[in-house]
Image 1 (tube, rainbow, N blue to C red):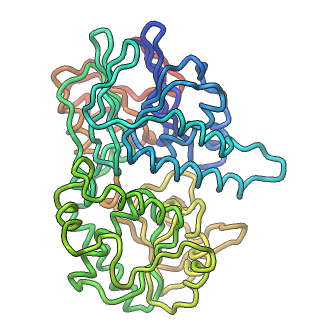
Image 2 (cartoon, helix red, strand yellow; image 1 turned 90 degrees about the horizontal axis):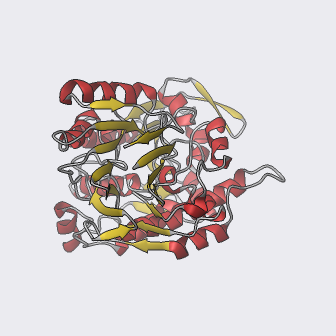
Image 3 (cartoon, rainbow, N blue to C red; image 1 turned 45 degrees about the vertical axis):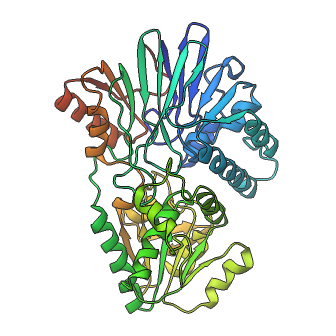
Length: 450
C-alpha cells in the first residue's frame, strides 16, 4: 500500500489521506483548512491526485475540517461512493450548507467560491451510510468502522489490504463523554494515524469541568453580567445542554436565561433528537435520561433563537444571562455580535470550551490580547476570560497514548497528524519513549510505502 498525506499533516485542520493498493484508490476524510487567511486559501489548491480515479471516500465524522472539501472533490470529478455512519451524513449536510452560506456572506464582489449548493446535493447522492463493525469492502480493501467517541456518529476507520492493516483515528473522544459512547479501542494494526490536537495537554476531570462551568455562571450572576460561550454547533453545544440541564434540575445554578443563539446548533440538536434512544450512538447515562421525563435538550430558562429578530431580542433581556453562540473559535457567526457588545464589560465573562486554532480571534483572546478587531472594529477585552479544556471533544495526551497503546504489540509505525507542532511533536516523542514504536510527524504531501 501507498499512503499520501494530502492534508491534516503539520496542522490541526484539513484532514485528507489517500491510500492506494494497485489500481485501487480510497480516501479517508476530505476536510477544509481552517484558521488564518493563508490556510483558507489552501482550500482552493488542486488535489494532489485525480478525484475521478478515487473509488471511495470514508468519512470519520462531520466536522468541517474533515468534510469541508467534499463538495469540491465532487465538483472536480469524484464519482465514487462516500461512506459514513447515518448521523455523520445528516450532520455533514447541515454543516456544509452552513459553510457555503458563510462563504457567500464573506466573499468579496466577484470572488470565486469553493463550491456551490448543487455540489453538496451531488455529494449527498453519492453518500451511503454504514453501521459500526459492518462488513464493507472496496476492491482490494476491507474496511471497518469503530466508534471514536468524539461526536455523534464519529468513527475511527480500520483498513486492510494485502495482509497489512492501517488504523485511522479520526478525532478521538474525551472520556468519559457526556452523551456519546466512549472510544472503542483497536487490538491490532500495522500502521496507525493518530490525531494530536491535544497531544501535549491533560484535560480537567469531568467533575472539575462541571464545577468550573457552575462557578463561572454563579460569578457572572452575582456581578450581573453576561456570560458568553463561543460553542461549536456540533457536539459541544449539545454537551453543554446536557450539563446545564443537570445543573438546572438539581438547582446548582441560579435561575438565569440561557440562550442558544445559533441556527446551525439548533438544527444539529434536532438531529440528536432524531437518534435519541439509539444505543449504537448514545451512552447508558444519556439513554436512561432520555427514557425518563427529562428532556436533555430543553429545560426551564432555555431559549433557542433561530431567526435574526429573535437573536437581536437577546439584547433586550437585561443581565445576568448566558449566551451560547457559534462559532466556537470566534472566527464568525453570531458570537461576534455579543463579543462586540460585552467584551468591554468588566461584569461579563467569556468562557472557551474548545480548541482555539492559530489565527482565530478566540486564540488571540485566550493568549491574553487586551484588544481584538471584530468586523473592522477595535474592541477592548475587559471581561473575565476563562477556559475549560475538559469540555473538549478531543482526547488529551493520556487518552491518545491509550489508543496507540492498544495496538502496541503489532504496530510498525505511527504517523502523528492533525496537530500543531507543539502538540504533535511531544506526542510522537512519548510514543517512541513509552512504546518503542517508530513515530513521525509527516509533512503535507509526503508519500510513504507501507
